Length: 392
Image 1 (tube, helix red, strand yellow):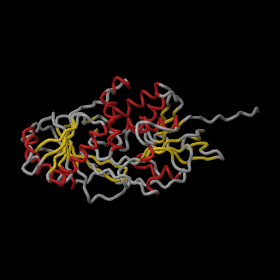
Image 2 (cartoon, helix red, strand yellow):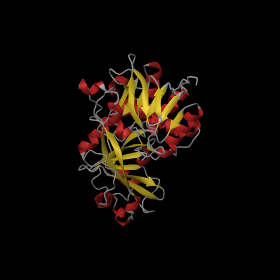
Image 3 (cartoon, helix red, strand yellow):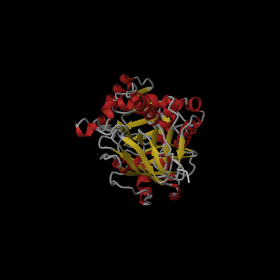
Image 4 (tube, helix red, strand yellow):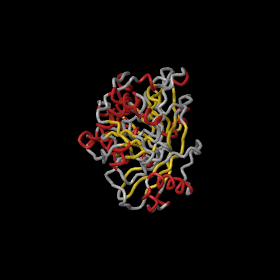
């Protein structure tokens, strides 16, 4: 019998993880002319990780310049998503309203405001306690001393954005493998040679780790110790409720971190439980309902009447880094291995910017969107952490 040469599939770039970040990177790569992109997703469908569990908030009201810059690319991108990508993402510019209950909180918002304006955010403004009381008389606002509001902040549908990115990328030549797990990375004397998967080997020189809360395990295939840990976050949707306006922004109670926004005919309630510990637990804790409803009714008295069905509530995973900023760029000492990890709850809102930054770095070695050196993995070893304090 004649010898048959076995041709392994090849890709210019292999993206590990098909959530919103991986999909955005695939979109931006193909938009820049890199067509042979393979996205590998271990689940039977995209969005079963953090993307599908997200609250969908997008905001530019951050405390560090690099986070603000990423939002200044991402939010206008979402505003024009359907025109750019050809699919809807349901961007709603209803704003974020941070409500300060102490003078220290207000001073913090003033400092952030100055940084946001300096970075080019034009729609943010500081508001008085009286203005908040006038806008939302349903709030218990006797202790609210002021706040900050940005009208271009708002919400998107993460699933629609993710599938829109991927559909557009696929139309330009990208391939999506579902039900496929990555089992290893092979190296030769040049660097990365192939990605090993449950569907066989893929020859490539460039790999992007977009594995979300599971990024550390993927990084170990490249011999990298990645400081990304999973942390459970729970969300509680209410039943239909009309005693609070559905035109409201995301409202953040800075006294305890409780925040909520309109969702369908009800509201979506969120709170970061400080007793939560690191781990891959995605079970919803029924006791959380009472904890969050107590805080909800305290800030919004009419929420004492709101109905919730615990069976509709869910839990997802944040992928946390020590300074609450993502790790972006090529891994030190491993040429061709790129990181897009550790978004600490901001993966959906910063997915467009991340796609642009990683595409730039992969194809040209540089980006002008941000100072990418700030978010490199080496900052941890070098003690260059940049703490984002505006984390929800």
